[in-house]
Length: 178
Image 1 (cartoon, rainbow, N blue to C red):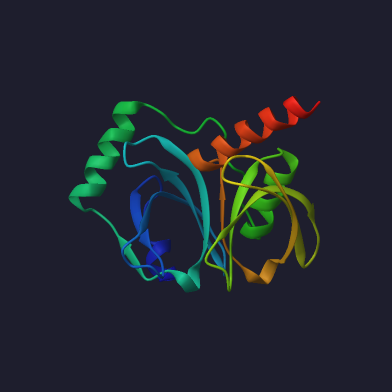
Image 2: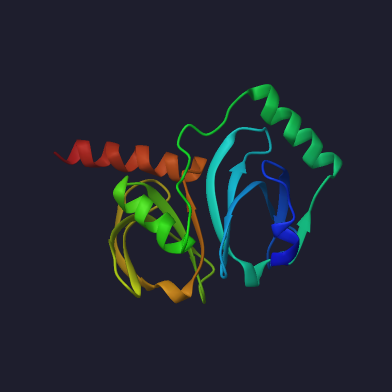
């Protein structure tokens, strides 16, 4: 699949399917290394929806040039919206997106091997082999701290509508606690 992804022109909107073949993510491929592919995601309505990093080994299908993707591309152009915060992705993509999240205090969602649930929170520490996350509920309430091995992370999402919602709610909870 990596060879196929390398041939996709810059700014082309694609759909990437992962282990659950009924669900897909749409956007522009903005980076790739030996383990991960990075996608600048869009909502079905053509609005920016953050960045998604997924393991290449989980990729099951790449869709290009479909009517759905053509319509999505038209919506993106009509909306005239490009992300104002381009994520600097180079080298080790997993480390780059986690470092970015730590430096900018972003809420992230981690998909972890062996768990059906996403871990949602802010990166507190990033080591050579582990990442520590200050976790939040779906409603932005603080929900403890968890540490994960980087090798167990299957996906990282940052700046999607879901993470932005949780960031706003968590900030509101923190202000009300003061």
